[in-house]
Image 1 (spheres, rainbow, N blue to C red):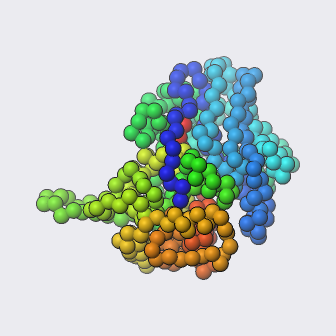
Image 2 (image 1 turned 180 degrees about the horizontal axis):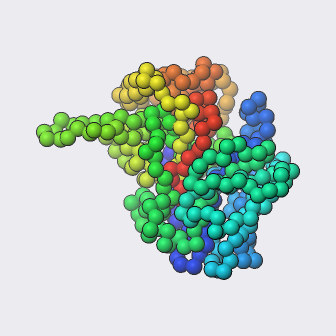
Image 3 (image 1 turned 120 degrees about the vertical axis):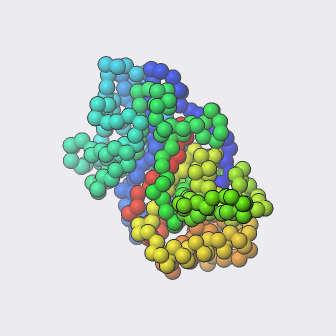
Length: 388
């Protein structure tokens, strides 16, 4: 759903003398009170509004905004200032255009306290909370429990993006082009049943996000298995399983290694590394299962994934369009002829035995709802790729 994207140009300036902050996302569940009881209405509370991060440095202010969703993600959230070596602190401010949003304290950011080129989690506190500075952790480590109305802002900073690009593998060239740079994170820890969430920038992707009030427009499911082996004399068998992702997609530019004859649309299995690197949208995230599959669940999952793959089901444009127009549960028209992205993910997870009956509405589930299945409860969203 919304997997085809338009090409984007790199926004960040790669040159000496620039202080660079990359604003990734805001874990802001506290800004949606009552979500667990009435999520269909609460998710809309900040609809049409913007969430903004501004950075004050050396007397100047730069800011970036994004749509105010639950777990908001910035599209190329790059802020750059002329760097002054004698000034090693700035003020980070989080605000919004929504009158229903909490008001947050400013965060005094001291460069000497943080490592450059790593994802930093900042706890931004509500003005009504204790006045002590927010907690922080480096490179994705957990902050146990943010306070009431506090949020987590994930950022990355460097005083020289050019040097960081040359010396740190976190900044990589993507889409086979020197014009595209992305923050890339390892996915080696992912396993069967974890989900991959994509944020595209095409008009269809924007419609999907606006319609469902979440930052994602497409979803796939991780498969970790041994590579397909063509019977070539002398070919060595792989000793280790490889990461793939199963998706229901429109036309893509990469090949499905499990198919001798490629199909343009529908259910495909792609090498995860290649899929992430070549994806044309502006970010890719992952959410892990709260509990890994048991051996029985894993066997069910893999069997059903390859059964769906072998059926060569086409991408269901019609049902995806209905989902955009209507959200009534009675419109759960399950078809064995075609599927769309979040429908496929729901089917795979349900057949593995990790979804409840109440969650089993495959034809009426959007990518954001997949991320909120109970099997992912309390799992942290992780960035795999972020365009800069």
